[in-house]
Image (cartoon, rainbow, N blue to C red):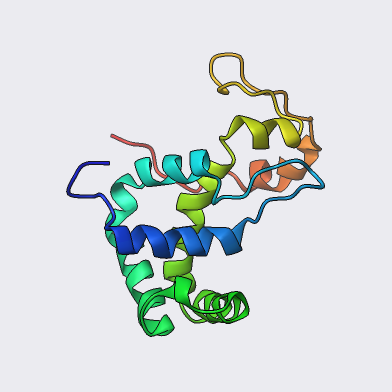
Length: 149
């Protein structure tokens, strides 16, 4: 993230509050929540091209909260965020995408879901073979595109 893309302190506080509700920690599975300092720092570093849409999402959440989301009681925050997700799924999707991209690349989270804590390249991951006959209708349909010149 460049300095121009960096979220303001207020935007960071709102985002932190949102991700706390999105993915809370789970002691039962021994995994951190999305508000974990390492994961949240990764989120802030990784906003990139989503910065304008994320800013718009956070501004809408702040507007709905009548100021700072973090100042509301937890139950009110949860209600407001559910309404936001229902009413503005386009903007909520940006917040969700930015958050889960970073959450699921954290080693602790990967380990908890049984994944090796390594990048997929160059080794890759084993994928269970499925029923290839499901593609027969597609093959039988024939070509539905034109060849490039």
